[in-house]
Length: 113
Length: 114
Image 1 (cartoon, rainbow over the protein chains, first blue to last red):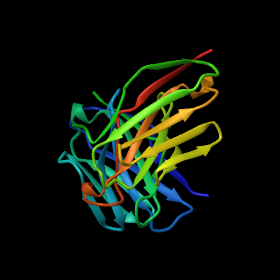
Image 2 (cartoon, rainbow over the protein chains, first blue to last red):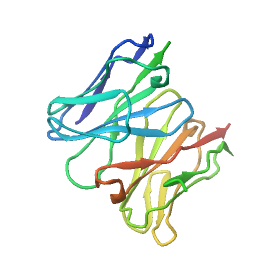
Image 3 (cartoon, chains in turn cyan, orange):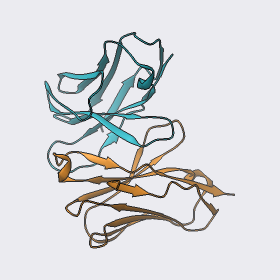
């Protein structure tokens, strides 16, 4: 069966510091991968998605970036965090191809102070 | 107009009752519809998917889709306190530029009272 991992689970970082969040998927090949952010009491905002190694699409302009160095690894980064970057960061995967269910990892709760 | 709209609630129902959660969407070409459950502080968990008009049942959950009216609903029969969570409606829309993307509603908070 497929599992998705995210780490760290929680993170407190000062404004201006860098960020690296990692997501890995097991038990599937060639997944579509997604990064979402959920602000407190808000819906899910799609940040990035990837259909293959090195292929990244960005949904919103921001100071975040994403990379996919391996088939089942997805990384979210920032060079300098802003207060507004605080939130619950969720990685998700879906099977490649057309419209499919997405499955979420456990998430990383980021607080920027 | 939001692409996917849900009543934010909170919706309260007594234990054993039927909880009815509704969702409307704006894009007529949407093809796939999903319901996720999110407990406080946790990540969303997929509970139902529906692709064609009509009802789809899975245990105590029934998803209903009406593409002509552009709404999808989730019924929870014999509601339990453990069903208390926020329920997110998600819709696939080609208008987003890729068939692989989902748009989420902001969620309906459900509380089942013992």
